[in-house]
Amino acid sequence: MSSAVPFELDASPALSRSTADRQESLRADPERLRARWPSARVVRMDDRGRVPVSERDFFDDNRGANAVPLSTVPALDVAPRLPEDAVFLGQWEGTDYWAVFDTPGADARTVRVDGGWSLPVEVPVDDGEAWVGLREHGAALDDTAAGLLTTAVALRNWHRRARHCAHCGGPTRLRQFGWATVCEQCGREEYPRTDPAVICLVHDDVGVNGEHVLLARQPVWPAGRYSVLAGFVEAGESLECCVEREIREEVGVEVRDIRYLGSQPWPFPRSIMLGFAARADRGARLAPAEGEIEDARWVPRERVRAAFAERDPDLLLPGPTSIAHVMLRSWAFSGGGDEAGSS
Image (cartoon, helix red, strand yellow):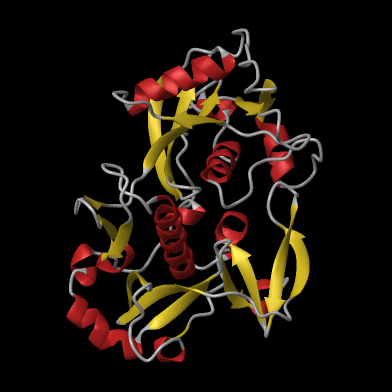
């Protein structure tokens, strides 16, 4: 029997899925984009970043994961010509996709649904469409929808924070169909920013993949909610050094054997989560950072599996939109310590 190998992510993180071609040359050709507007499709987004999907698809109890498409509309139903405030999202199967602002109808009713972590959210439903948010329901979307909406939310959040020039404070206007701003006073151009953050699954030293995972909770989280540890990369810091520092600062544990797992955009407002795994001594004393970490504990693989199967109501794990969900699931259902030690 071959030895077990270090676990890897068993699927792409929900917000890392994308099919649209968003290369810069597409949005740098205004004549092409304006000429193709009549055949384009448009994603409508409200001021909370929600977009419409089919009510029937969204509430279908038999639908699989990653299955719901966006309810796009023909561009000519929005405007006869390309609007100045439309944002180009990319091209898919020969069709250009854009985002514009819109709202659910005034007569929309509200339906309460699970928004992750067993917390309900209100979803407007109007004219056969449910308006859903990326953070709560990104994992329900199909690959094309997830990629388009992640891009749209990221650009929307950047636009809201880029209304003034970082150099002189002057007002800015959008350029490159939503992908740049230019200052009206000094002419400085700015482009969307992404803040790197690390997120690390720390397991113990048993075998290759360990038998316990280190989980923690913040004081503001609902009771029973735990996740892996994460933090922002500081100026002049490597990703690996950030992993070491964040784990040490948050729970007082030294980690080793740091390795990369994968990444996921997290546009809330403008992060990218860089996923890692590392090992630590389960016998080391845990020292949660005061005011930041309310509790930290080692949790056995069997209990994590039970939580995923909803058989442990006292342990709430991250919802499927988060990369933490994929990391924990991949670890929990990988080979354990005993299997790792066999040959």
